[in-house]
Each structure stands twice: as C-alpha cells, then as structure tokens.
Image (cartoon, rainbow, N blue to C red; front, top):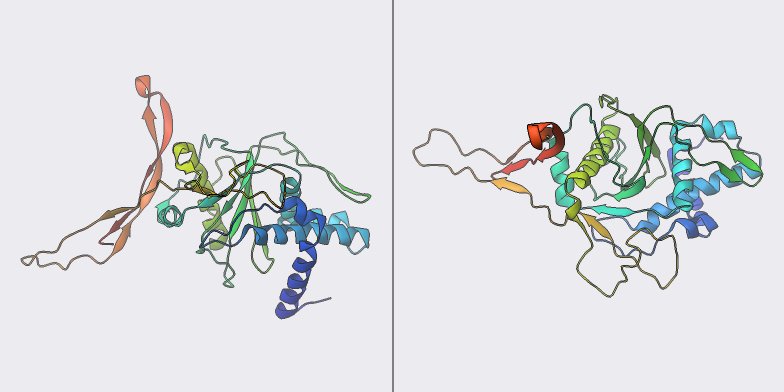
Length: 307
C-alpha cells in the first residue's frame, strides 16, 4: 500500500501509541525528568519501541521477511540499536546548548586517529537545532563503537532469528529517528574521509565525533546537575524501570564557557566596527610528553566576535 505523507504520519502516530503499551517500551524507557529545551526521553523510547514492535508484528503476521529488514541499511541499523538498548544498561547524555553551538562553529579533521572509546555505546540528547531537509527535528543520536571482528547481537522475534555478521574493520556507527519516524544511520570507518553526500547527515556525524572528542579531552566536564530530590542512582546506566525511581540527567558541557571577543570601534578609524561573527574553531593533534613523541587532541574553540 502506498501512503501519502499525511497518511504516513497518522500511521506512525498510531503505531507509537501502540508501542507505548508494549513490553519494548517498558525495556527502553528511563524515568528521566523533562529537561528544558530538549525532547522528553520517553519520546525517544516510544519511537524505538515502535520500530521493534513493527518488526515483531510484521514477522509474526508474515508481512515482513528477514530479508526485508537486513537489506534496508538504515532500518536494520535502527532495529539493532533499539535491541541493544533494550537488553543492556546504557548511558544517556544531554549535550549543553552552548557547547552544541560551539561545535557547530568548529571545523573537524577529515580523518580522526586515536578516537578513544569513552563508552561502547550510548545516547546523546540534542538541543533543538538540527533539522532534516523537510524541517523535522533530530532530537537525539545513538552511537556505537564496533571493533574489528565484533559481532552485533543475534535478534529473535518469536521463532524468527536475525543472524549477526562480524564487522570487518573498526567502525563507529550512529543512528537516529526523527519525530515523524524517519530514520537515519551511518557507519564511519576508521580514518574515513567525512565528505558525506547529505548535509544533514554530515552535521549529525560532526556532532557525534566532536562530543566524543570533547569527552576524551575534558572528562571532568561530565557532571550531574546540583543535588535535588531526584535520586542519582545509576546515573543513566541502570536498566531498572521502577516507577518510583528517577534518574538525574548527565549534562555534557556544564563547565563550558563560550569564548567572546570585543573589537572596539574608534572615532578616528576609517573602518566600521566589525559586525557580530564567529571566528571558527578547529581540532588538532599536538605533540606532548618527553621528546614530544606522544600526540593528543586539542580543541581550539570558536570565538564569538562582538557578540
């Protein structure tokens, strides 16, 4: 059946409501409070639960085959990611909006060596700011390190088993689904040129890589909010789902301070004061240690001039 855009949105809306009552939603949801400027975590859980429920029901009712799933790269990546989250403890990080804005104004190298694994997989909650070409918001992104030879989970839905394929080289994969259910996924091979075809996907990829580089260089800037009545048990890694348990969001970049610079105008100058603009930042590797034989990443922050 061919759906119009409006019919597709209505079908997705109905499916998400069904998914909220499913066992998949119970496995995926975490009792995080609403963080101002971000979508609720429950919206992410409902979207991923919907994808798992669609596969489960489609295979059981014979409307889907395993081939349908594995040959659709984006959807299969989303299913594997949702399955991984449903069966494992996982970290959830909220990316500070000022740090997010600074990342957007920073250039990233075409190839990144020695990217450390700060976590094997996790979720980065994004402030509003990234939209796809149709204007749909991207509210979160899931990332996962896939070392060479590692195997993704074998997934079973009823009597249907989706096999695992070992990775052929070190990779970093990310996936996301937008508010209307549109899914995106990409795999970054080691030292791959990041000249991607789609600007939307390139922006997400840059944010993921810069967030991981930032965590690598500033592990001290991953602190929970000031103490509140909310329990900090688990700090986002617990797989429990007690109705009375509340998690405290982990914010990346709470200590981050944007850099600004004021260029004063003078009465005797023949040039006007420069308008507000960004002086772009960038990432680079610098020599350190004895004999300067070691290398580490440094972020040269962007500067808001006359901001």
